Image (cartoon, rainbow over all chains, first blue to last red; front, side, top):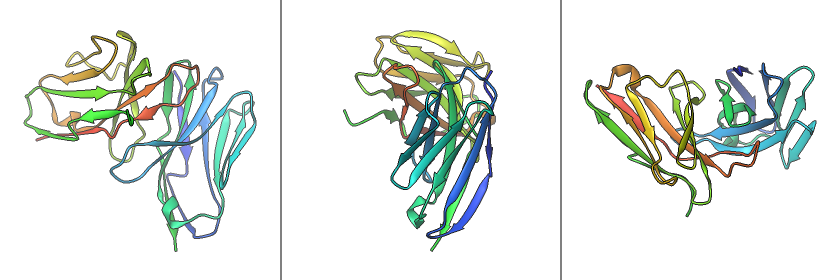
Length: 110
Length: 114
């Protein structure tokens, strides 16, 4: 089955800096890669996603890149703000099987 | 319909007792998923329904766990003879079934087995 590795497990940045979280996946059939943000005690919320036929997608300060050949994808957050502090999860999906990475705890220091 | 609803939000139970959780998905979503999340980990897939049919079960779902979605709407997850290792957040998610579509998660049920 699919195995998703996520790095780093924790990330601390200064407000205004950029943050990058990287994930790798094992199943080359996976074709959909969402990213979720989870604040303490709250549900995971979809923040951006990318499909396998696209290499990059951007939504304001958030962007995701996908390298299908290398089977890795990354989340980029620019101009970080304290409210970006949360745990971020990547996931890889084939058909109905969505597997999550272990998460990255991002802390943005004011 | 404002999203995926789960009930209860918190459940504390004694070891050996049975517990049941409920999930109400977004009404137009035909797919429903149960995940378990422990502290510091990503959600782990448990089982998945398309309409009323349970199509996939993880090996994490021991025979003490059973899930139903009798009318293709709400779903229940029952854990029999709870163990301390069952303590976790149980998340429900739904999707419209579009291949590669995002899931909408509920707020989860936090189970503590004492």
